[in-house]
Amino acid sequence: MAGALRKTMEYLGLAESDERFDDYDAYPEDASAGDREAAARQDAPVRAVRDEDERPRQGAEVAQLPRRTPVSQVVREPKMNELNRITTIHPRTYNEAKNIGEAFRAGIPVIINLTDMDDADAKRLVDFSAGLAFGLRGSIERVTSKVFLLSPEHVVVDGGAPGAAKPATGPFNQS
Image 1 (cartoon, rainbow, N blue to C red):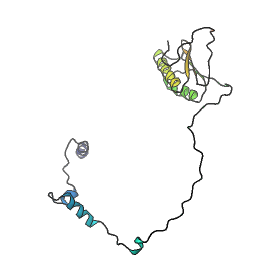
Image 2: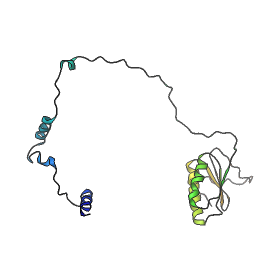
Image 3: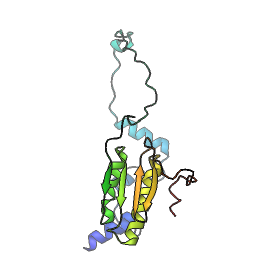
Image 4: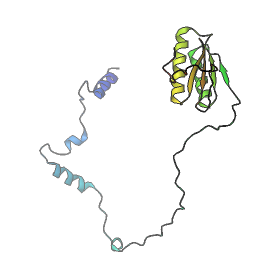
């Protein structure tokens, strides 16, 4: 156990190593860097130069690759056809936030009913949902005190109150 502790301390730099390396004794301490390089070159294998190396080499023909049209920036847009599905989720714990995120990321509007959750987890889930809506350019709207609607960017939600001032859009206006 002491050996492992000692090695760990040496690795972290908390203790000095007692081991000597083989390379330290290979050169005298007063030898310059040039002398060390020359000694290293002497040990390296040497290849003889042949007449064949001086002849110009014949290159192979380079095949041209077919040209493709340049690909413009990829934009992921959901299809703008009729809305045929809305998901309602009744979470009991914060761990069910993954289900909300997966459905919303797929472009499906999500109704979140938080009546089965305690207030602390419900607040965390609303904060998560607001960030999700903001990140994916969607919107979040309060339906009742514990029911929220997450709608993707391509879905327009009519509030139903004619002439009412439109509330500020954004994840931070949750009053």
